[in-house]
Length: 69
Image 1 (cartoon, helix red, strand yellow):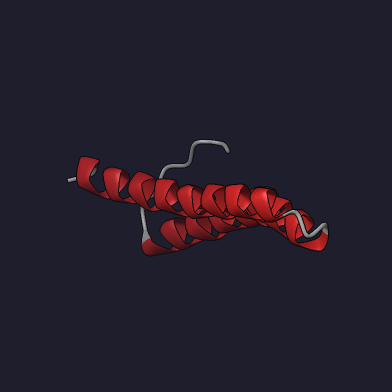
Image 2: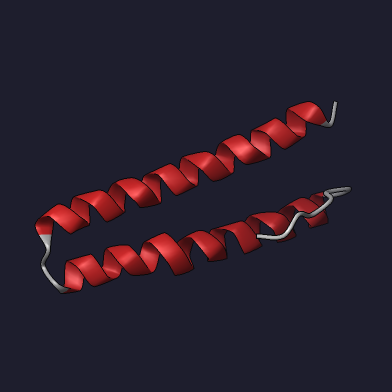
């Protein structure tokens, strides 16, 4: 994902949309594939990866907000 400078709420909204799209394209599709294949161990792994990607994105956003003060 490319670096983006956030100067306004609109910039932040665009970043959030792009980040969510990236997470869904990667981890979401992996989870969907595991579910389709009924691969229980892989479902757990990919669900955890999806959750971690969401946490990482939230921490990234928080860090940027704190660093911007």
